[in-house]
Image 1: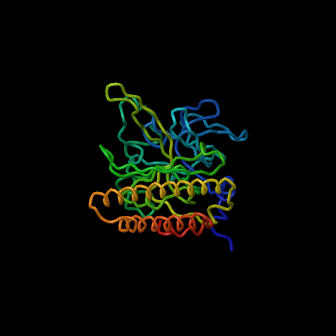
Image 2 (image 1 turned 120 degrees about the vertical axis):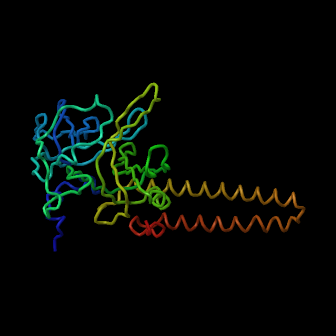
Length: 331
């Protein structure tokens, strides 16, 4: 029996190299340059979503035209070292009125008045949609936004954790999601929310994950308040990740074994360093307290044996198939 996903148009393009990679966004086409343009979803044009049109049979839309873009995500690394994601269009279509924003969703606080333009899509002064209607798509606080969906699966190439600071509200886990042999093509993922630290503790290199999030552009100041250097970094935003299954990843690439070897090597080095530190600490305690050599040897061997045992357990986990890794089933 076919699933709803198998019967949807998404099924024809949803996989890239055997791994789930699909997205679709709606909005208004702006600033076309050659075969590229951006999709504006709010009144802040500086964070409009970049789109690449590689297919020759896809026509670049005219400026301010409503558009629905179906495509896939490709990761890239800039010369500065920052990772970004590119959205390559596979198909362009006209969206329905329900897939475009109302005034409440369009009007957002802008970064500066200079960045705001005078483009107003199709609103009128009396645009007061009945939010109590059962046909209303949206909520009373944020309105009816444009469509923005990103569905991805792949392997964790690297990850890092950042606590919320300054004006930030949530912690964040940065994940490089790998789908190709070249690690520089890994897709940048940002997982926000109060459970970000819990996700980080479950992650490991080579872990197969699935996520559903949003395609967004991050505005960051890489300079100072006196001399700002504003950069715009496209990325995938989400609030949760799950362990991928064979429905999400249909192949086991050859380079995945190299990732597991790297994890195994790193684990051994970390465990060896921890064992060496414990031995040194035990020797210092023994010499300062005047205990016997036999006692010192016993105290040093106990933690070392537990480290060896833990290393063996991690090695056993790493060598298993990617879809049955027991250490991360609670992710």
